[in-house]
Image (cartoon, rainbow over all chains, first blue to last red; front, side, top):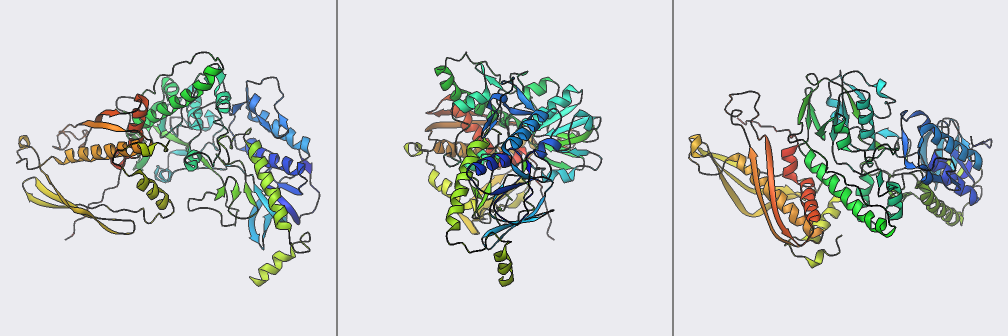
Length: 437
Length: 187
């Protein structure tokens, strides 16, 4: 637990929203810089991990790489992958060790910009902050495509948030939509529980867990891929849209891919395009999305080979191309093919419904330049490829949080020049602004 | 990836394409195009279709001239074969789209193309269109495209060109994915 904050709400320099790894990381760095701040948390520390993750989940990052600013993994299983309870403990301990000024059970309901400051309203209190860090995560809501509305009422629809274990899924056939890490992990778990699984695969990222004697994350870091910056790559929007690679936090498999789940009995179809009167229509592009994934994986492994050769790593294993049926399924009938449930492993998105600052683009994405949001003093953390390719990983938060903390301190300095007296009283400026507006 | 683009000449104006991408990102309305064809029955199974005008970039546009195409059916269908079969036009569209995409992607990636040839085959069971067997669909069962490409690039890079072209192809999407089709009769 972080220290319980007894100070009364009111004016403060910085409000951090969210006491997950990102909020606690930036809190630690703000503390080091002597910045007065509070961390508001809707539930408990590491709340999403506590209440919104399935039982079998493990981090995709090996333990030796899992770290936060000022704290590295020091357990006895460096090559393992944290379970959810282990990660919760790691984050809890971090908050406690740092005495993070966290206010739990405090749900932010609105943030407004008023007279150059942010008015942060929660279910408990109200703050006026010169700067705000949005550390609420990128995986708050499941992105479910509009086609979900057209499924017959009898089909049970789940998102990864509803799924804890195979028992949650009704008997009968399951359609898993999506071939990212979530889709493949769920498909494998359901197949191992004896379920009939169809997996609808659009574009995906194929990647082995181990390559040339090392975990793939070792190579992604050694080659500099994890550190690629948002302002140095060709098309950062494409980087941000990339689905999570088909990985699992385990070394029991050399590679979790479509070949693995089809070998366990899954039927692989193309992307789910449309549902018409109980008939599911899949894209005929399966062969091409598999070719794209195979080609991109080979390109990645080739890039790694340069570094691996220099380190004298053992020779590469071979990965057979993704097997695609001669005529992959184009249609299924919910009744005839006994589809009792659909799991939408179609990605996640952040929830900004409480953000009343006009900083979202027409697709509802935050407008930001490497986490510096398009509104002075507003910052984000933990978004995919926010400043670096590793941004959305636990270990990826450190460099981003440091950049954001530095920028934020600079902002506080520059904005305090010429500030009005009374800023530390209970937001009189905001009130007068409202009157004049 | 793009810095060698100027060294190759595939006759594709890559700069213009990249500029368009940039401009249209912030101008979604300008990106709305409407494509049109007009068709007239000529007798028998022969029709003549013309394309000239289309809408895009916020206003009416037109090709440099009108293009006209005859469609008919072969003599073994008891037709007069005054033009290609409509289903063959679909293949023409797919070939044209994928090949254009290959040229554009190659130029963007700095790959010089020397020759690009495609053979397209599509198989169909005409018991469908003849109404013999309700379980047989009218359209193609599958389409196979074979490319022969000579380019100054590795086999993998050429394979990646063809994959990327499919990923960005309108006709590939139209064929591989469902589209709502509304046909009205104006009396």
